[in-house]
Structures are given as C-alpha cells and as structure tokens.
Image 1 (cartoon, rainbow, N blue to C red):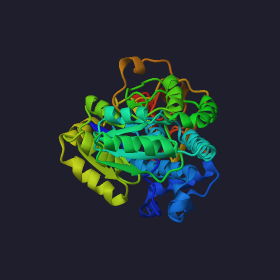
Image 2 (cartoon, one colour):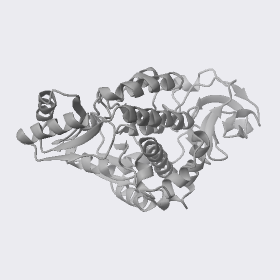
Image 3 (cartoon, helix red, strand yellow):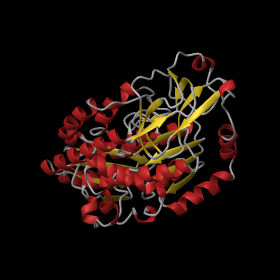
Image 4 (tube, rainbow, N blue to C red):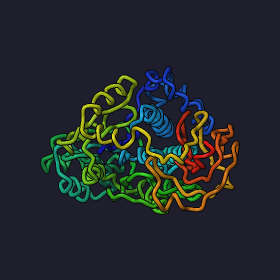
Length: 414
C-alpha cells in the first residue's frame, strides 16, 4: 500500500523549482500563477531565501511545487492509496485526493499564507524543537513556564515542537532541558503557528473556507488535528480552520497511515523533512522523497521491485471496462469543469463499474456531445452513449490523455 505525504512551510529553499523547468509538469506553475495573480516561476527560481521564507511566499511556493511533483508522478501512472500533509501540506493532500479543486486550493493557500503573515506581524511569536524528550515532558515544560507557550507539532518520537511568545518559549525550553531534553533548537520564524496566537488568522481563513466547495476525498486523507480519516466533504472546512490553532499530530498521523496498510510512504514536494520523520516513526516502512525528476526515476525503480507495485499494476494495467464502455479523455492539461447539464453518477475508477453504477440513470450524449471544459477547451465525445460516471472531479487539474468520464455505448455502433 502506497501513501503520499506532502510537506509544509519550512521545506522551501532558493531555486527549488530549477530541476523542473524543462519537465512537462512545469505548466502547473503557469496555471497557478494565473489564479494567484503572481509570477510564481520567479518565486520558485529567482527569489532569495529571505523573500522565500516570508510566510505568504513560503506557503504558496511549497504548495505549487508539490503539485508540480504530484503531476509528474501521476504522469507515470503512480497513484496513492492514502495520503496526509503536514500543516500547509494538508491542502496539497486534499487537492491530491480530489476533495479540493486546483484553483480553489491556490486561492485558499494564498489567503491562509497572508492571514498567518499578518497575524504574526501583529503578535510576534516563535517556535523551537525539543529533541530527546517525550510528549509528556514537553507538555509539562510548557505548563510550568506559566506563559503563552504550547505544543505545536508532535513530529516524531522524541521530537516535539513548541510555539508561543519568545520569552515563554525560552522559559519552556530551559525547563525541558532541566527535565532531560537533549537539545532545544530555535526556528527562524516570527509566528507561533498552530497555537492560540493564530486566532486572528483563523477568523479570516474561516470566511474563505465557507466560500470554497469541497467534495468527498477519493482516497483516505488523515487530518492533522486528530490523526483520523475524515471521508466526507462537510468535515474538512472545520478541520482546516481548527488546524491553525491546534497542534499538528504528525507522528500519530503516520501511525494511522500504517494502520490503513501503508508500507511505502513517499514525500511529494520540496525538501525531505517528512521522509526523515517517517523513518524515525515507522522504522519498518519504506520511505523516500521525490523532489526532482531524478527522484522520480528512483521512485519507479524502487516500486517496480516490490509486491506493492505488482499488486498495483495487476489492478490498473490492461482493459478493465466492459466491451460496451468507452472512455472520454482530456485533450489538454487544465482544470476540468463538467457540463452543468449532465447528471451522471461519479466519480469512479477505471475498474469496471459496479452494477449499481452501470444501471444508474445518466445523460445521453450524441457524437460530438459536450462533456465539459478543460480550461477553455471544449471536451466533446467521439461516440454516442449514456454517461455512466465521471473519472475526474469538478475543479480537478487534469493532463492531456487523462480519462474524464466513461460512457456506455451500443457495441453495434462502435
């Protein structure tokens, strides 16, 4: 079982987009730039570290580059069975699962980054990693500090991050060392993320979330707030809102992915921080990071020799549709918008549709009938038939040749 993990703020680095410039998936950057109204290619290629470290820039750059890497992985036919993202990475995980549309995801990340940036300017905070101490010890240190300091991330065994006002974080760090912590490592950030000091940002983000459509995730997504899978769209706006002021339960989330059956965990995006945390938390799992096209080749080579890959390939290769089924594919890369007049069930998978789906009432299309749009390009069916199901969510970014929907046709007419 293969799980994808997506990094958050802190994984960005100067020039991190350079390895991807000549890859077909780089087109994601141009599309995201149009939505955000910013030159993201310049941010990923030319911005210095100081500019890239600003919260609003770091979050948007990390999210977009993670989607570039995800797009590249999907182009070679690899898909996860579950996923999770660390802080900002949760938005990437939801986009990867189909729960959050590409354009909506870009807009939300812009709003989140700006909200957190402005809040940190108004109320200065900081963060520090406590190494070599368990959760109870770090929690006790925060309580004994008698100030505004809390646990912000449960990252891995003996690695817990605290956040709050600079004075309170310093006091709690000192107490943690007295209680046996091996090291206290300060982070060069100006905000106390995932604590009560982010309440103003949460209020602003909540408004943006209320205006954003979500759909049910196609695969399990483990939430930061409680390390549980939440399968319905209605749950996620509140979870993303709560995340800003709640600790990231990353160690617990990795344990949940393992309980779901994940034995290979792939970090998708810049850096490799999550891969290290995975190896510490799940020593029996196989963990690797894909941050460059070279890493993509390593991923394919690694999986090709595993039982996971052979099981996946046996389920996804070859013809799995009935002889009366035909797939309509995307003519180009872009965001998919199905025609509003269609009432087909879906989305589904490329496996043969279930009896319930096959007999469901769907729209009848003639040859040349409009299925929807990819970007501003019309998608018209080359054959007549009844729409059985969509294979892409509204708002999902698709690539050329990606299946969008299946139709049931008369074999006599094919």
